[in-house]
Length: 73
Ligand SMILES: [Zn+2]
Image 1 (cartoon, rainbow, N blue to C red):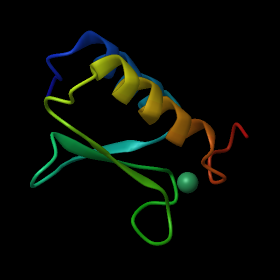
Image 2 (cartoon, rainbow, N blue to C red):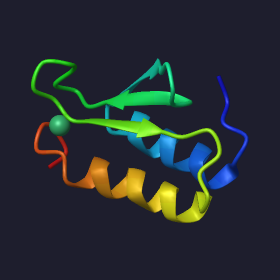
Image 3 (cartoon, rainbow, N blue to C red):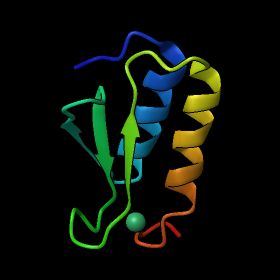
Image 4 (cartoon, helix red, strand yellow):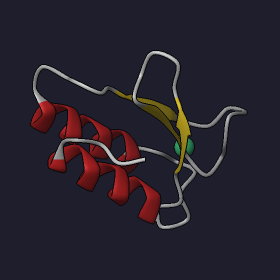
């Protein structure tokens, strides 16, 4: 499962490096779940065709960075 936009692909890889997992979404391209998983963890929808892919990619990274469940923090 590869996103068509490079900025967003990079952001997804960044999230995965931090231990986030990728699940297919119904309306979104996919949903990212933080290491805490679906029970009380953070999640972030990744859109297939956001109006501004670069801004969406930054938004994904920001969500990963503010996650309190990642070991690295
Ligand atoms: Zn989290």
